[in-house]
Each structure stands twice: as C-alpha cells, then as structure tokens.
Image (cartoon, rainbow, N blue to C red; front, side, top):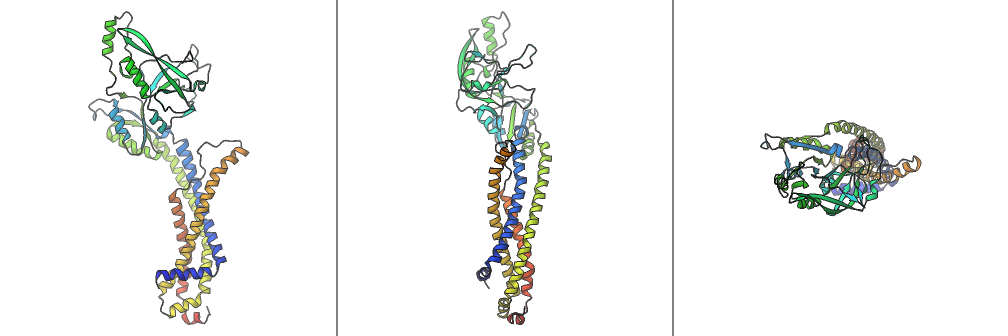
Length: 449
C-alpha cells in the first residue's frame, strides 16, 4: 500500500467518528497550548527583567580603559582607527565615547547663565543606539542641537552641597548661546555660537550623583575648533603678565584640529547581555584593557533557565494527560476496524503497513492538536501582554514599565512544544497499532474481536 493510499484510508476512517476525533484533538490542543503559555511566562519575564531592566548599559556596557602597550608600541591612547576597530567586532551594538571640550563656554539661555560644570562631545547616534536615557525632549537630530544634564540648573551652597533645584525641562527647544573663547594676536576674545536644547538627560539613579554636563555633537565641536584653532577647543594656560608673543607660542604647542583625535571614556555596548563575555574576550585578544560586570548576570540567567525548564516540565505533564485520550481513541479505532484489518491481512498486507497506518493516524491527531494549540497560545499571549498591564493599573494602581512583556513565545519554544505533542501522540498510538498487527484474520472477518 502506497503512502497516499494510507493517508486516504486514515482520512476516511477519521471522518467516521468526528465527535470523538474532535474531542481528542481538542484535548491535545489544550495540553499543547498550556505547555506553550506556561513556558512563555518564563521567557517573557527573563526578556523583560534581564533585557529591559538589568540589560541596560550597566550590564551590556564594556568600559575600555586603555590599550596594551606591548601590542600598540607603548601608545595607549584610543584614536579614530580604534573606534572603527571596536565597531567592527561582532555583536557590538554601539561604541560610545565622551570627550571633554577644553573650555567652559559660559552658555546662557534667555540671558540666564547655565551653571554646568563641563562640556562633553559625544556621538549622538551611537548614544541613541546604546540607550541614552532622557527625562524630557528627544535626541538631537540636527547639527546645532544639544542635550542638557538633568541637574544643570541645580544650585550649590558655599560648601558645594546641592541646594535649590530648578527643572531643566523648562529650557527645552530654547536657544542656548555658547561663548567660545579664543586668542587673536595674544588677546582673549569671545565668539557666540547658537544651538537649540533638544533634550534633558535622565535623572541619575545614584542620589549622590549629579549630571550638570552639556552634551554637544561632533558638528558643534567642529565649529568650536574652527574658532579656537585647537583640538577640542582647548585654550592654553596663560600666566599673569604673559605677552601676546608668549601666548601665541603656547597656542602653537596645542594640537591643531583635523588631526587624529584621541578619545576618553570609551564604552563598547553589546547587542545583548549574553554577548558581553564573548566581546570582552575578543577585546582582550586585540589588546584593549576592559571591564564589565557580565559575570554577575550568569546567576540571573541560570535562575531563569531553571524556571523555564520547570515550567516546560509541568506543561509536558498536561500533554501526557491529553495522550490518554489519544490512546483511548486509537484503541477504539482498532476495535471498530477489526474487519478492515482482517481484509487487509487477508489480501497480503504486511503487519508493518498496518502498524504504520495507525501510527500515522495518531500522528495526525498530535499534529492537528499542536497546530491548534500553537495558534491559541499566541492569542492568549497577545491578550495577556495587552490586558494584564491594564488590569494591574486599574485594580492595583501600579504602572507596568513600558515594553514589559509577561509572555514571550520564541520560535524554538513552539517547535519544542509541537515535537513533544507529536512524540506523545506517537507513543500513545504505538500500543494500539501493535495490537492491530496481532489481530487474527478469521476472527476479524467473523467480527469476533
């Protein structure tokens, strides 16, 4: 008997008792859906907690301190070529850096002095990929846009203790004037540059830490360097009484813009927390001294792995319970089709073909149940992620963090659940299929079975 004939035989017999078939498939689908939904809770919590809460720059960030002098001819500074080298490492999401601008440009907004403490030049695109947090506004999209530190308007008393706090978001979309200092013929002058405040950085998580920095992009730094004629807008230290000739001589000792710029506070951001360890090892092989806290994440991932295995085990029990229905259905099918089995054996059908027919039927029941259960589980997962935050906020008056997922169904979880359902169905149908091969032809034809 060909495979196509076996399928037709199975399909015809399955149509004879649709109600029993429906209930068996329904039980299998419920068990498969229970397995997927239950396990999806573990996957969802891991993704939301690890990736969204501890999976920020604190965990995915790898700090680059310097280079191994034995591999880089004793020059441990980081240059443009090093930044490109770091960006080319697999699984690197972004490479960020923060360069000090060599002067405080006495910025003002609406005539009010901006009482910050330093100016950083950053790569805003890389910072955005790395997850730069804002409390208000947006990331800069134009050349003349900047970001202000959360505490940039906070005042300090005579001992340097923070006192009065003013909301920096009041300066959003306002024009900030940067007064760039430069020397001309040995005389210090000021030239204003205008920019727009696009965003305010997030509040530091550490209470003792204050962010009073001004963040500018590379294009604005280029404007500053074109005015000062020095790299990073640096001005020379001029002693009192220095002559213009001496000041000009000091200026010549400073690096000119356009050269190979070196970088400080370089950080490599991994695409996922699980990639941190591998990237760190690659960095060490390349000769970059680095540090990360990837080892702290191992215990967290191990805990979630154990939880997911436990949930899958409990869900598998539901599928095994559903297999009782498959066993009962196939046993009854063998009894009801005894005459058909006798006829097939009488015309020379091999026992392996008969066994294969009943295993094929039980496999189809398992596949149909797995497909239906998978569709249902995706629907339940969507409903849980959409409805549970609303219920929590309504009845518990607690807001669920944005992007938090209670249920996540990765493709391999679906494949695993379908494989378990199919395997259990095959095992459930094996005993009845074996019994079918042992039916006596004469008794079957007399319908004595």
